[in-house]
Image 1 (cartoon, rainbow, N blue to C red):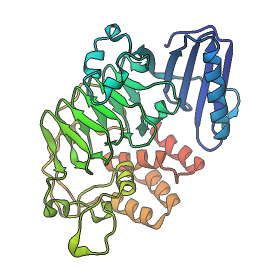
Image 2 (cartoon, rainbow, N blue to C red):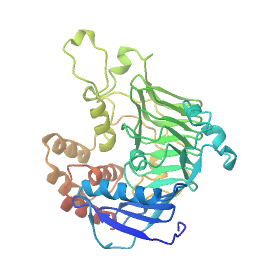
Image 3 (cartoon, rainbow, N blue to C red):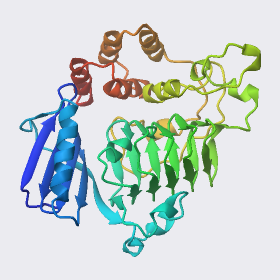
Image 4 (cartoon, rainbow, N blue to C red):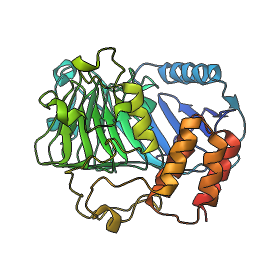
Length: 380
């Protein structure tokens, strides 16, 4: 449980279009924000302010911002379940936590030396049940940086692919997700990066450093400053890759070009996001991956995550299963209801089925009614 504060103002709001909520609570100079999907472990952010009345000002600002999004005040329909909790550190007191030393070794961190900048600190790792972009923390406008003391474990895509982000991000442990996308922030992971599918870096002024090893099917840099100090057990594409290497990727991942004879293989960012969120194979049919599986993890894994045994299989490209082929056909046709019905009725609840289920649960095209039907499958 997070620390309790004597609340003077508390408001709970829910979204009219998705099963999501936000709760704001303030007292004197403190503000607590709890947000997430109704019925799932939520994110908790604690902040304090030295200026009198500033906590109340932030409370009112966030209340107005979420009202503009269509959220309405109501009574919680179920009890709030707390998940990952963020306390705060301040950049002018680096002696208060040992992780400030590697934090201030990250590109761009010198801008925060000496100033009073609030840094979100997840003391027990960061865990999320769905796709997670760090914008969901940054959009509150409360934190300039982010430190995760422990592992990041996301049952979906973990990303920083927006223009709203904590500029400096440090993870002291491992990152585990279906895929991982990075863009504008300066990020360092002291442990290993384990993904089932894609590691993607998009062109910008940001940087990504992995101190340990990288495991996944594809490590793709679209002119992005990204590297692993350890071994990269993934097939790598970057500025040094030859044309024949890029041709191993699905043609759907590239921007269309008029001159096929003078191709430059520009990654289509929207297509890459779609591939990551839908768990689609980045390889052209028939191409072979030289990726290596990650070693078994001792961490607690969600029931939706693939088993350790399946992660230990050699990651070579195989023909799409009949189930995934049908899902792809329905996706190409834009038939969301057909995809939902197929997932509901498919008898073999294997890794392909779990990938499709997670993808459809978070897909914008899934209606609230379809999402409830899919969520019911998790409970059985």
